[in-house]
Structure formats: C-alpha cells, structure tokens
Image (cartoon, helix red, strand yellow):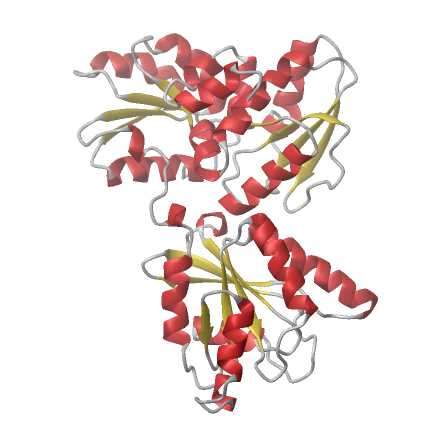
Length: 410
C-alpha cells in the first residue's frame, strides 16, 4: 500500500466551509490523526494528502482542503489552492454542518463539480448533535440532491456506511483499468523492449514498465523482457510469434526495423496515453507536428521534477528532433511538477510526458485545458513515434486512435 505511487490512486477530496469538520472527517476515514483539528476556523491552509487502502478500490488518496469560505488576501489564496484540487479529484465529498445549513459557497462548488463531471457525495457531519427525528437531516439531503451520508467524525457514527458509498460511487476505471490486458489473451507472449541508459534508475525499472509487466502477468500471458539490441535475436528464438511488442519510446526506430510487419508493435507511452488520458486526442494532436514553423512556441510539460540527464528527453532530445523536422528554430518553454500555465493560446503545440506521476483525472483535466485553448497536444510516446515515422504502426492496436490521426475533422 505504501509503495503505490500517488498517481495510481483514486483521489478523494473533502470540500466544505471552514470549521465544518473536514479535518476531523479525514481522521475518521483514515483512523489516524492525520490532519490538525481545531475549533479555530481556517486551521487547514494547504491541501493535506493521506494515502490509505480502501477495499475493493485498493490504494486511495484522501485530500483535506482549506475552507471554501475563507476570507482576506491569504484566505483567497487558500481557496484558490482548494479549487486547484478539483483537477485531481476523482470523487468529491461535500461536507456540510446541519446546524449551519447550505449557502452560496456549496452551490457554487457543486456547479464546478458538475461542470467537470466529478462524482460527488454529500456528507452531513455532526449528526450526533441532532435527534434522529430532527427534520433538518432530511431537508439537507433534499437540498443537496446528492447521495448523502449522515456521520459523526467524533463518535464514528456512519463512517462505515460512508466508506461503502465511496466504493459504490468511485470511477469504474479504477476497478477495471485498461493498460494492456484487454489487448491480449491468456497464453499470449508479449515482448517488452527496455533500453538501459543513463536515465534508467539503478537496480530497478521505471513505473510504466513495471505496471505493464504486472498487467501481463495478471492476464495469464507471458512476458519476455529484452534490451533493444537483443530484440532481433530474442524474436528469432520464440517458437510462436508474439501477440504484441511494446517498446520504450526512445527505441521506436530500431524496434520498428527489427519487428516483422505481421507483429503488432506499440510503446509504453502510448499505452499510458490511453490508461492515463485520452489517446484519440493525443493522436489527433500529432498532425500539428507537420504544420510547425520556425518561431512557433512549444510547451513541454512534465508531471515530475526528476534530475535531468545530459540527453534528457524533454529538455534536449525532443527540442532537437522538432528543430530538425522544422528546419529552423522553435521557442521552447518548460513546465514541471504541479506547474501548468494558465495562458496557452499562443502555443502551437503542447508536448506532455507519459503522466506516470499524476492521476488520470489530472491528466484529463490538463488535456481539456489545452483543448479549450484551441491548442493541439501530444505526449512523449505519440510525438516520438511521429517524428520517427512509426506512429501509424504504433497505433495499429488502437483503431479509434488511428482514425483520429488520419481524420482532420476529428
């Protein structure tokens, strides 16, 4: 549970006004004293993230946020940070105090959650302070118009029922994720091509490779793992041809040359473009590479803040390949970690990493932000396959993505 990266967890965020009991609720849900609890309004200043296990969902992140009614200059900044959490939220809990009722704050937040299509549960806290026959509980449920639980963070009343509602309302993608398992059958052989270079962490594989390997094993198929220079020899030793070859993006050209046309081939980044985002939109964005011209602005966005190597893919290789393709200079800008520009309209292209360190909700939010700005977006895998001339082949396992690439009206 502790080793599951945050980006692969269901993100459950708790929203509400100051002093409504958000920190107490997160402590009750996690059964730990995670968040500071105080009678003084505004104790929580920044979002607090707590990883835990919630079966059958598995690993989740519970997020405590500052009050949506915070005041003053600092309060405004706290509210802005709270609203930023919406982009990461897979399931929202709107916490209300039955003694205070509802106000415009809750209605405005519900409007934002509905706009983003975020599943939301109502949670009436401090239920222990009301008599069971008190009509305020029923009235609040009706006004919220949401599936609603009545709980007490102090006595733990209703906490188990709330956890069950969370499980029922959580996005189904987390119960049945699609990485590679739906592309293979039990007994199939999948060849994974993993270059070992300076950027590869010592003694381990990177996360997308490990997750792909695990998904193959979970679907009772066989995995053959090789470096790119050993691929041709390994293919020659297989009795049956593999169902699929998956390669690191940087080895696309060599792998495409060594894999027979009759064997489907794709990349880890392309698998993750579907698993973590919207592969069709990213494939359609690849058409913009052909229309880039000297002087265009290109944003390269990475969700992590790793130490950059001499031949770093985002800082060095992608700019080099795009400049060579354009035959002139381009104006590159970089964003890393949680940083993502608000003003995107002047960019000709956004190139995003594989998103292994953020969750699907945040990646989809980023894609939608770029799309609304009228800017095409690709990820590393789609772009590398494009500039190396193998994108059509790398998208063969995904017919809709091939259509998006070829159809200018997509």
